[in-house]
Length: 282
Image 1 (tube, rainbow, N blue to C red):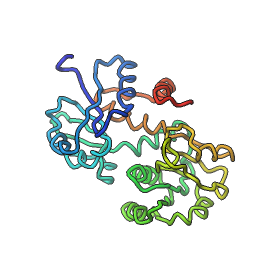
Image 2 (tube, one colour):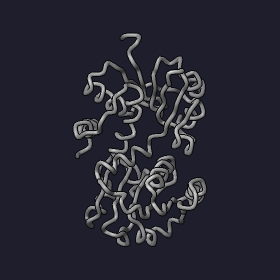
Image 3 (cartoon, rainbow, N blue to C red):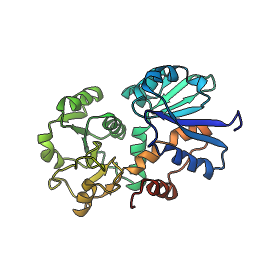
Image 4 (cartoon, one colour):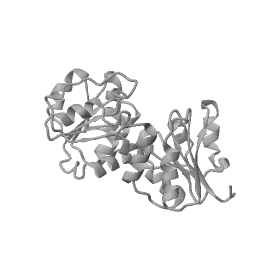
């Protein structure tokens, strides 16, 4: 392999399950770029040193997955606004001066998915309800506020975690108890599940959607199964729905552009490639 070949990787612990090499490998081939994208497992006890001395890795950049996003952000010389806000970076690159730069593209991935599969979804910029209070929920809240939603409600089984996000993002974010779910469903234009409930191997997400307006968009960041019970229930009653696979694909776009100099597109061929690898029935 040529020494000047641009190399990037997905880093985390573990990374064996990552589909990122498939995504970036597809784009490298499609655009005829002689580059390399691989998996690089970084153990927790070596992560801080690895990211602090990223320039010695031989990589031009990397994706960062759990549990290293916060460590990676702390090691960066520069962060984009989303990474600063969330204290976590999932995309790294070295600038021309060799400084380590970081971004959090999860929110952009969420927006890109909805923009592609539900054009005009944010025209009303009304009220949204986010289920969950983990890292993905933070990214989704950031994304919705960037599109000027007037209120973003956050519900989590542990209320304190929802309140923590609400406190960080300001007056348009409102934490609420799970018992208030029915009432809030009747007020919102968008419902987002960011929990792992409904994922293959996890407990189901059991909620009654009857108070929800049939014009409200329902989306789930879970993509295995592609059509979760939440999405099936919403579609059966006539709500527009968007599955979670596109978030995974769109969040990868900015990194590829930084590393290899071409802004790729998320097309049906890529989507079908990943679905086939996941063994998911489209």
